[in-house]
Amino acid sequence: MFKKNTAKKKHKFKKFTNFADEERWLQNMLQDGWILEKYGYEDEDGCTYVFKPIENKEQQNIIYKIDYREFDKKEDFLEYKAIFEDDGWTVLSKNKWYSKHIFCAESRSSNLDIFSDTESYKGREKRKIHNSLISAITGFVGFTILTILYGIFEKPVFGGVGLLFLISSLKFMVDYFRHRKALRSLV
Amino acid sequence: MNPLSESTYLVLLALYHEPLHGYGIIKSIEKVSEGAYIIAPGTLYGVLKNLQKQGLIETVKEEKNHRKKKTYCITEQGKETLRAEFHRYENIIFFTKKIMKEKEL
Image (cartoon, chains in turn purple, red):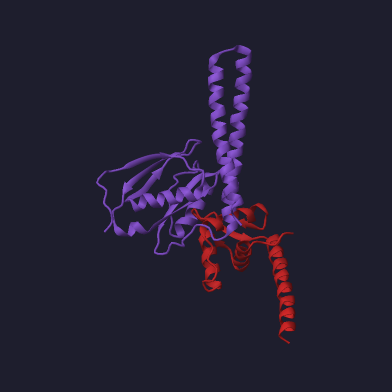
């Protein structure tokens, strides 16, 4: 028998700095009887996950996998999505504005994966590292500009916003270092 | 020129045979290799993007094609790259055999 949850939905806001940890967390939620229905856009503080109770035993065999990729064009995202769907995966990212893509599929074997070589795992980390660094630099530039403005005009608002930029920049730096570590661990 | 990754080589080989859409490439490789090579979708998409960027494959323009799926075909440059890689493999096999036979004698 599988655990049946009486509650309707469960919302969680969480931040991960490692894809494998996030996949494991989703698997654990499934073991507790919660299946991922949807999730929102991700920022430096994380993203919202919406879970619903599992409805049948087969859903216990669901496997979650995560890819990280940005799309310029809608048609590129649709093409990407079509390849996964043809292969039997459900794509939980809703549109081209998502850069974190969560996939799920029912499988008897736990070997099912969205990647079939190490190069692909490295690619996922490299894309994430690149974007984290760009965001961290952008945040730091914002902080610098606002600090200069604060120095000139002495308005507290510049200092306050500047500080927010700095905090955001530091969070992206954490992402950057954690994913760099993950990349190094891939042989 | 760097050696192609195994997945890249297999995708080029599938398209050398005939133009295919994304999932068709996975199926074609699986069939030809009798199930020994199954490329996962995330890996395939990455390989397709890289090959397109390098001009080794391109998408076929089909006006009547209403499906969202793109059809890919190999370019002349792609064919040359594949042949060069094939010769490299042949070479490796040739001297591998030579050494293994020497050992046996």
